[in-house]
Length: 312
Image 1 (cartoon, rainbow, N blue to C red):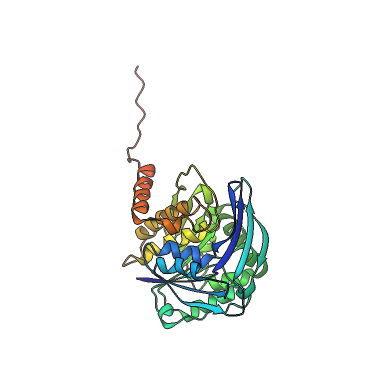
Image 2: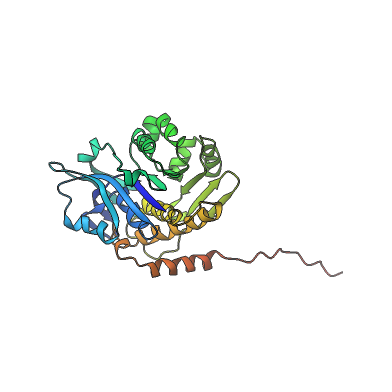
């Protein structure tokens, strides 16, 4: 199967306790498409300015990501975000945001992007997400969102949720969207919106959960000794999740569970270096090894315990 992602293609400036980068490739559609490219053919839909150069295009080309639907504004500048992390890597401090050409982004899907089997709506204005969904013939559609949209246009976020199959958000967003402090209850409440088939909640260093109509599945994060930069980890997770689903002939409970593992694995590589630096050097062998490790870390035998009777 094939996959389309619609979202931001950007430049990031990043600073963490372990170093800094002044200008590197970023954006939700970028992180997602590079991750998904290890499993599926990917079409990226976005917008950039004429400052987006040959080096940046080469990254997409090396991973066989179709960029025909990334619009180039000749007299514009690419979306730019500057952020800083302290030792609590779960919190990003925004230092500067320049929307530039992204401010007028109005996604237009080519026939090729319209007719992929899967579609991921990365974090953009919910009305735009819904408009993209209406252009697409995808059989399985997932979406992301963020606290800003939930705060300012919650009804629009919910309206978009009603026309997709899966929501992939973090734990704080799930609590906010469902108005519920318990993430398990929040997931159940979100499942009641429209025709959702799954709710995926990303929990950073605590792993991720999958809630479907009749089941619940949870996995830990992959254990890492070094976390340099979490920027794009959520989109990389979504890319692994949707990319793996796109590689399967059918989307079932079992394939979604394996997709959760692949999403977690891909995000674990992402955070080991800045931006896309680690993922662009990644090999299929490394992914397979980490999948085997993950299976070993989480496997246990089902042996019911019976307490021995006390001797008289």
